[in-house]
Length: 259
Ligand code: NAP
Image (cartoon, rainbow, N blue to C red; front, side, top):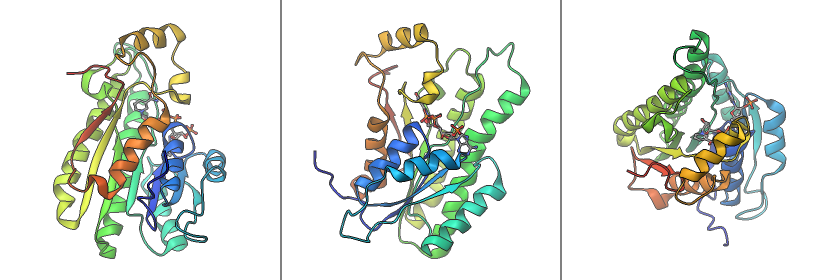
């Protein structure tokens, strides 16, 4: 299918852009014409994504991508990212996809406090820091509109054995998304959440095969999802095609846990 070029002349920030879903989102937004800031804790993987991005949509020179390092769990690092974007582009990104995330699984009875703290620091606090910083710069610049996309998880809704920290962080991301939508609509900023099910990425590569087989057998569509299938939804939410959607959570699960 030909790219619809819905994001020509838009600037987009993608955290966690060095891998998996974040990388696929960077690639899809670039194909649609956006200039993309690939932000990741790993500079090397961010640069690898950068090298894979399309350019030239909407005419030569119309698109310029950069890779920047950020640790989303640290306020100073997120502020440095926003300053770096301002120095490169002289404007804030009007599209922001907060995809950085980690797991550190264990059963509730065994989970160490530091693993609970680290997962919530990256997944929930990191999302908060990024969307707060980007919203502030959008409001301050008087930008007419913005689209913020958070990445939750279907397990934030239904729970998952061994993921008390992760499911709590992802449920928090959904709540944060809804509040952000309510507070920022008056500034023309929308905020929506995608809820992936089980998607083939380095994150799920760590899950034992027999667990993956069990999960796959529960998915009505009978397979894991691909990062590009989540990226397609993010591109829709980034674009004006979703202009009357805010505060929504969209499941991208192949039907897992319907209802
Ligand atoms: P992934 O391949 O591991 O990608 C996550 C990226 O985030 C990695 O590049 C990682 O860098 C980066 N990152 C980790 N900590 C960071 C930090 N403090 N600051 C900035 N970047 C950081 O995982 P994924 O599966 O694509 O996950 C992307 C998002 O989707 C996550 O929020 C995840 O929770 C969510 N999700 C995934 C699934 C799934 O089935 N895959 C399902 C539901 C939700 P390093 O690799 O160097 O740590």
